[in-house]
Length: 133
Image 1 (cartoon, helix red, strand yellow):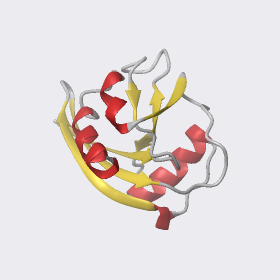
Image 2 (cartoon, rainbow, N blue to C red):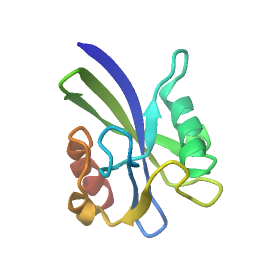
Image 3 (tube, rainbow, N blue to C red):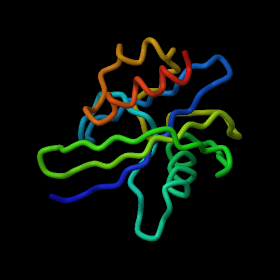
């Protein structure tokens, strides 16, 4: 089974809310909510991927020291196995905007389960709520 490395980020605002991004129509798992991020390219470190993806997807600039690893997900989908480190970020430059997603939502940690997510993202929620509540 193919192993896919994807990195995700829980952006946390000053009010302790977490950013969720809704996958756009036409993409796999369209309509589901996820933590922003993306596939790690060849020769790229996970932190570099997040810096690139957060700029492309949300229009923000993140510095590597502001990314803190929290946990990871390991999930077997039907045709690939996903390994997804989750980083936390509380500081960035710029205003978060949906450049590639259908919508964005700032969500209280205890409300994260109210948003339908890909199966791999769901086990990450208790780690975030444990950190923030």
